[in-house]
Amino acid sequence: MKACIIFLFLTLSTALAAPVQIICLGDSLTAGYGIEKDKAYPQILENKLNKMGKQVNVLNGGVSGSTTASGKSRLQWFLKKSKPEIMILALGANDGLRGLKLAQSEKNLEEIILLAKKSNVKILLGGMRLPPNYGKDYVKQFRQMYTKLKKKHDLVMIPFLLKDVGGKKELNIEDGIHPNEKGHEVIAQTIIKYLEPLL
Image (cartoon, rainbow, N blue to C red; front, top):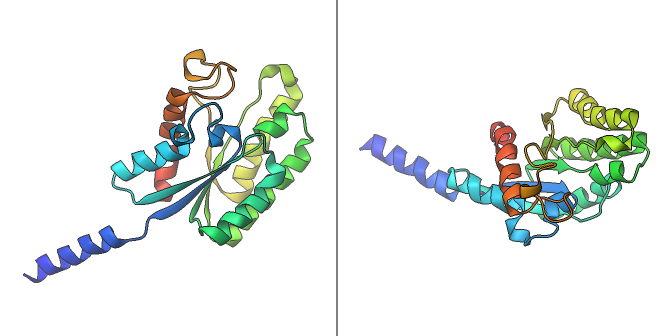
């Protein structure tokens, strides 16, 4: 009888537990440019994780066209509004595509990371890559920017957020850059592999 009561208490406690707040801080890839917002990977993540029995609420903090420069202020807003426990940091693609100085981009990303750490937010860093036509050195430095931050701050990192999606016509909208609904499904599945240990 006592065992049954304990079991029921634990089951009820789990059911009543507040969902883990996850913020996806990103650009158009996160916002779901070219598709319905509820088809973008943050919503897919929430649906998949909840079906797996994880109590989560995933917030879409993606803004099309944004660079790393706007990330810190956006995170500050979310910290006040929803108190996220985990952040998926997926910024930097627009910095690279615009040829911005990577030293500044790295500094911006580090400020976001430090703010998250100060607020006890776990971080999943989404690595990005550039097309080869941006120059061998710049492309290499851009990729290394993420690995440097990963090592320096001991972060969990997805080597390439668009793994199995980038460059595949059938998984992107007509511009060939932004994922379609199927592409977002693949991204969500990739993220889950790295996100689960943080939950």
